[in-house]
Length: 386
Image (cartoon, rainbow, N blue to C red; front, top):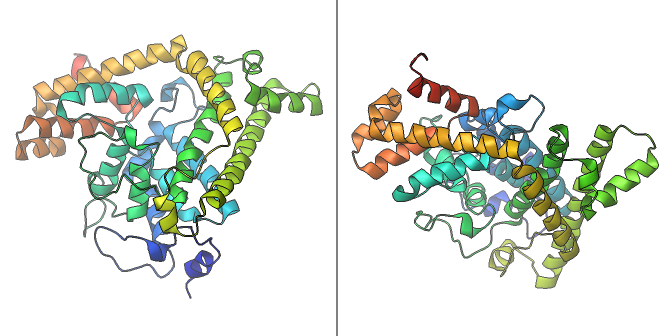
């Protein structure tokens, strides 16, 4: 018996075992030491796209400070939360981790403002959405193996990427016939999805306070924050405010994780789920917060939107990012011969304007924040070296 077989024998009946996987697009011999989802995780970690996440914006552009979250650290934090929930619920940790680590591989530079800008310029050519782009990355844009394009990940990991957040995030004209959008993803993928929300809400509090955009006095107006911050102040009189915030965030994450575990268990029992097929056939997602916690979390999200994501410093940088992406895209569309040789050759093979736009979008989406800024200078600053 393989080590992975012993591990999977401890999982719940409705977990996604590797023996139930719908496989890979290209057949490969199985590993003697790793289950398919562990191999997926390892391929993701070793990918070029994953390394580039180190210099892609979460909220703050990379050059604004060394201590803020990036897409890379965010992805690692999401994976840690997802594994914790799966371990407590006896679900497949490796699958949840693979989905969590892959969910932002297709994200643009400059965070959501970069995605919105690229989607706007790509609107006539099929649009742009980072879940779909993450799928393109793992299916075709990564070039690491001689036997197949992309990373050849398992169906379940790729499904988790496609169904991240919700089906309304998927462009209507995307060819996703391989994935049944009318059935639920695995519990592990659903957990990876919710772990993303837990991570960015709570860690944006930490970064927001560090940046001076959020204040403790303001955050204490929010019930979810106050109910954890007040006990920290009571237990540790005179505690440094930054440490108090860090401890509060830690307690908030733990509180949300426990609520997800309890509520998801309740839903599983209520629906009568006994197998993976039952999970897929459920009318609604089975992983989620209880109603009271969902409401509290919603209040926090709205507060962060108003006081952090709409803060003038973030808006200013977002505006600059949009201009950078729009102008780079326009320049390449007008003169694709300015593209690097490998991307230029892709355009030459097919002169259709839609194909040209998609190649350019792939190139821009793969840029880090600093590379996009440098590329902007190379294209438009007459004093910059090409």
